[in-house]
Amino acid sequence: MAGSWEELAEAASDLAVSARAEARFMDERRAALARNALVWWQGEAAEGYRLRVQERVNGLAASAVELEALARVADSLADGARSRAASEAAATLAPGGRG
Image 1 (cartoon, rainbow, N blue to C red):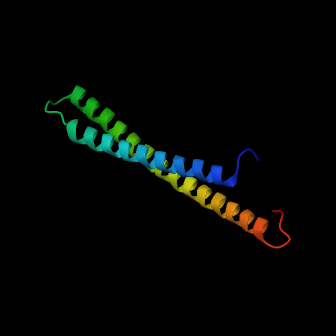
Image 2 (image 1 turned 45 degrees about the horizontal axis):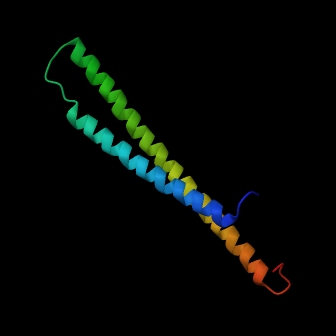
Image 3 (image 1 turned 90 degrees about the horizontal axis):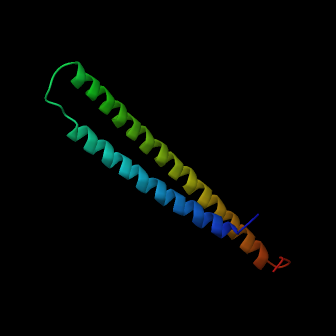
């Protein structure tokens, strides 16, 4: 394995933080778009615009959900790597260990 379990845990934690920040950004953009995309005109062009805006709002919401899921997976990976690092450290310090 290239690197240590601690390094993997740190990288996974960084990924989780970044993914959560991006998810919040997507939610902020979604809310702003939904709030500011109201149209006053009527007709086919207005309806087309509303549909495109709704598709974009839905896409931003889906992206935020996927980023939150990524953050949860990265948290789990970080926890597992930390646990593995602690187990290896304990084995190294134990009588008869490698250390």
